[in-house]
Image (cartoon, rainbow, N blue to C red; front, top):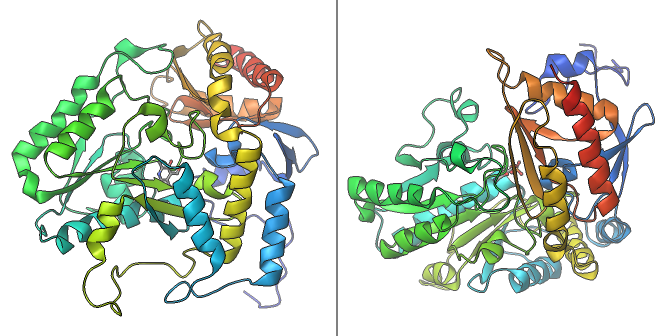
Length: 441
Ligand SMILES: Cc1ncc(COP(=O)(O)O)c(C=O)c1O
């Protein structure tokens, strides 16, 4: 190609879009060109109500002035500082501020740039933690069917979404999966389902099979988001905690979606009353505005590394952009916004209204399940015979035309509006979705 080629602004060919049906999109593009609070503006000038907080990340809504101003200020003052062997104040402040709102046993934070990196970082910390304590045989991981832990090799190995794994070879060895917790007898449950705590007992079987001394960590999402919103059955996470603690296995909660207020508490661990050994986060940490993630750990895990000569690096891991100053500024202003506006607990206040609105969709054509917790919801549709995912994708396209942004995975519609959503906007979102569902083949 000639170097002076100037592609037309509407040339969509070069960008290979992530997790997208590229050919379908490029034949009929859906372009956002602006965003403010609860709405996106489309290229053809329409307002679209954001029912998904972007990709579960814009918890405070869009283009919040405090966050944007903090980013501009930091970029002008100091754009970048090396992350290795050098520091800058905002990174320390942000880590302290996140730890302040985190579950009581969390004491340290390692910065990454995404949820996928957070997961791979947590898995590496788990391996290294056991090794520095002289338990280097603990190398196996246990994830869960239908789990989503990002797209790194570690994440897809412990993850359990088939299409995210099947094209990419054998990935990490030594990984087992617990059964998923999506049981038909729990259909249309409001909040946490009654049935399924016993599925955690499978962990005991895996421990017996491999020997506890060979297992490093169990990783689960406390509420599985990307696979289509699967709630933890009552008592299930408590069981996982008890079994892992009994066998010296670390428990990692992947809170990339549930962190920062989605379920009505800063973290799901607090809402659900179960304390893991590590928490991964991203998305809501910076309101999605600048890529950033993190791993929270207990003092016990961190302190296990703080031995040996003082000049020696304790953990051979990190990213060029770990604790990037502009991302930290975004994170601090995001936390200020969450706290000033009560957003870390607002999902709890709205949960009743949200639940009632969502469950009003019961009885509409093809709806086979509705689930909800905090400000998350899912409407599961009966798949069209031989065309899995087609019905929900049609709903997604029709919803966009109707002025609402929803997210679909398989035949499940997932909803997670920004935590600033009003009651009237909940009614609008669910009302428009109801009209869409009535038109589906
Ligand atoms: C639970 C969970 N973990 C990890 C990730 C990956 O995050 P990212 O896309 O920022 O790499 C996601 C993304 O949706 C997620 O939901």
